[in-house]
Image 1 (tube, rainbow, N blue to C red):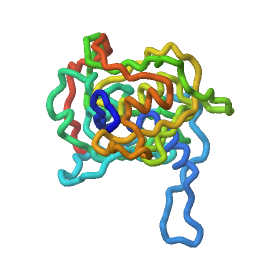
Image 2: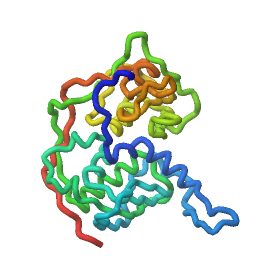
Image 3: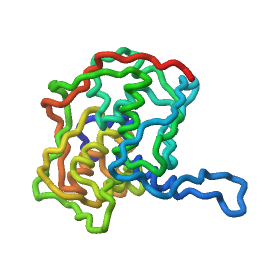
Length: 277
């Protein structure tokens, strides 16, 4: 059996961070199916101005049904639908951090889940930064979130360059600057397009049980595919993809090294449950 190192976890919320903008763009092109009965939202097909700073014009917040097992973010033009997400999920996406970087908050930040439906006060589909700004504003205005940042020593994964050097393909196409990530790693793998090493580190936090930091020193943006098997499905078959840590080294020429080091944490000073509306 292939060797494996560390633990591959399942972070909630961060899986959406890098993909939100791609979701927004694809949703913006949605049309009604010709000759079909299924209705698809028709939304503005132009982006917001890059220097726009949207907030929620209107947002309804309700506790999720306790039996609801589905959840996620759906972006359609200037509309944002959030299903069955905790406040920790919202903070994680809004500030692009791992949930282990959120500290000293009440227990309900993780256990109480919410459904949120809202729309921006500016037409057009928002990019990732603008979606994050909207979530930050919502957390401040509706949850009365107050926090401060400080450094604490945490268990983290450092991405470094493996012996032999990186195996990365430079991104060369014209781009609007937004990185995208798609796929879950198994099967066809997870595809990274126009990603910096910081983008890659951020996206991998969705699959690991601790924060990930970029210590490669590699500049620029790259396109690559990473294919791995979850820990519980690794077999001796020669066709089986390796575990995540081995895959990163063999396929990308990088290493995920578990270390302890200083990391930013968001210390919760105050937060309140929102009133229903």
